[in-house]
Length: 541
Image (tube, rainbow, N blue to C red):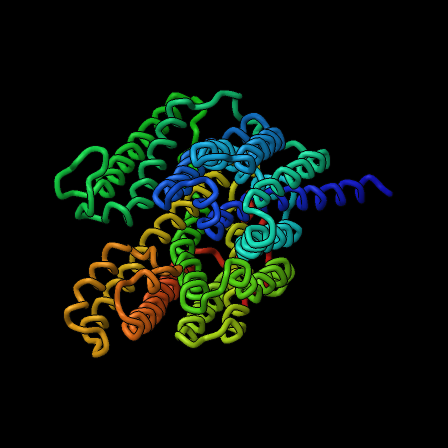
């Protein structure tokens, strides 16, 4: 085998290794969602504690991803990737042997979160530094396909392991995959920013981490404390004002201080955490704007369908994952093909076709959502949704990061992933709040207008709806409800219809945000310019 063929083989094997790492990071974020009841029972904890476990993971990831990307630029992306993988494996092992919620929080939320913050930007930045031109488009197609398929297959794997063995195995498998990743990393070529001194902007890192942490905290906790008017007091009371706007405001102030500090670092010719010149690149800025708005909308699907399948159709976690398979397979097939399509279609056109197809898929899911709907009723809608996601997820990362000097790939990837994390957190909080509020409101309306529920019982039923805050959606409420059998049947029927209403409203948000991404995508260039100075010429029909 010639040296050129060996180098080519090494590049693509390296992509497989980094894609495996990306997959376990994404899959890991879905494990707790489908296994909550089993974990709470085994660890003797409650839903509020588990919400904190998930929230802290989001905070760690959002706070440290930019720093993780910059560390890769300065000290070596392969080195940071391997360190992140090692930490991720250690955190997974701790989580897999957890005997209480605090141990799970330390292993999963903190240790795994730090490992993921080091690994995630490195996976994308190594694609940028290793591949160019058409090969880069295909590589990002594979990368995006793995990311999309992992997010869709995650609930299936988590549900299967929880139902057949134990939720502990969802974390134990990570340890095995990390071992393979570390062994396989020998084929990865080290890349480093040779233009910068090997010093880290400590003040910038702290300001960046704290600002992102405060913003994400405010967004995630909005469903608990309220968006503006306080539902209940935080540790410190702000009167009628919720902690949400306070936390977001503090985060924005810290972000402003971060920008001022970075400008000072650049003026003094020191190495900043984030070179603000990166935001002068219109292609990069347009790409992260599309990514952030798209991330907002994808939360609608995450909320609507799994809750519908489990609450209304009474499917378990594994069968719910099976129901999403058409989307998973569609992403897995279409995303790698998108790199080949770039030979004939302009990158921006591929992104826009993907966004429009995603919007169509979400609308078809919305149209088919009904109390009596079966998983098979959503097959073609999910195929369309997956095809759109596959086209978009691979190419939007390509067009966003290809505009950046490969020496700054880690920094750019860190910013891109942080923006995606913020978008996902905001979308989950916003659409989740709309979802639960719609269910509660429509249930109360239907209870008041019901001719089956006696007038004397209506205040009791309504009080239970208001105090449950959506927790009764997954069963148990009807049997414990102190009313007659006919009334129980009526309440369950009302709950199912209201869940469908909440799902439909969430899906409308998904469609709206996705169409918003289409409008923003017109800022993207038709011809994708790579930082090497060349222009990738594509058809511009």
